[in-house]
Image (tube, rainbow, N blue to C red):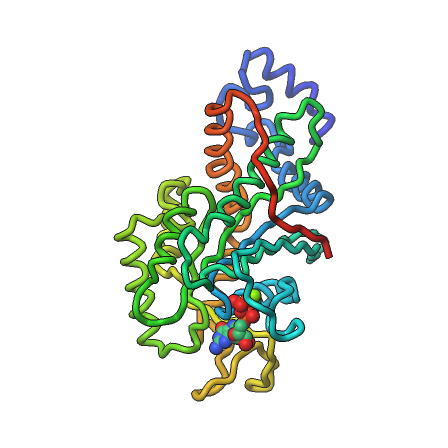
Length: 341
Ligand code: GDP
Ligand code: MG
């Protein structure tokens, strides 16, 4: 039916002067004339993505000891963050906020992801934490600038390397009280330039009641301070999107637990943490919300995180930059370190 019918199909549509060759004048799509093959675009895109792979850049922010490195390692089931406790034990807290980006290629089902974890040791660890989000904000903008420069190059690369931060996991201390001033200031300043996903760290240190109450309080505080975290209300595409994201927003911030230790539970080996009440299983949704976070971040919203970064945050930077300067001037000094393992 396919190839042999094509000349007739084109002629047929031309005769009727349809603006959409192949659709026919009835407007009923391909049913009238048979299969065209439009749906193979999905397979074509899949093949291209498989070949090219993709970049995903995740930043972790929160004061030291909150389990940031452990959590990203748990998320990606490998030692993607160098500074977890399992990697050479103690390390010194730096005197100022440092930015350390480490990249790995992770492959699953033939799909390659270049994952970059951007750690921010020293954040919130000083006596005076005033403006300690500055180096972070600078790093984020530098990546937009790099991308913009590549984009406006006359001989630009076929595929611009993407170092832009797609997601910033912000770790809230499980105090059970309220957000700290620093938490509020950071999220207020950065939520306009990057996708922030707040999480409650080390939630195994709270009872279920304390956890629920704390989550409720944090949500209220974020609302009071007008902090828009990801997925932002204003960027919902349609009603279906809105309904799905409403459910996620109502469940945020996810109270998570990370671990690199396995335990035997009901004959199965599971990742967990031993507490006075027994083993808290990382992936058990009755024990903590790690699985919710993982599903949301990787299995349902990873592509959207990249799109919001490109279409909203980068676009805002780009428009402002081109407007303000009437051209491109480099942003000064780069104090970041990048390495490829
Ligand atoms: P970071 O400084 O924020 O990167 O924290 P690390 O990942 O290095 O973890 C600091 C310490 O907290 C280590 O001893 C971890 O074993 C422990 N830790 C990590 N995640 C959790 C958690 O979810 N719950 C508890 N109770 N401890 C954790
Ligand atoms: Mg760490």
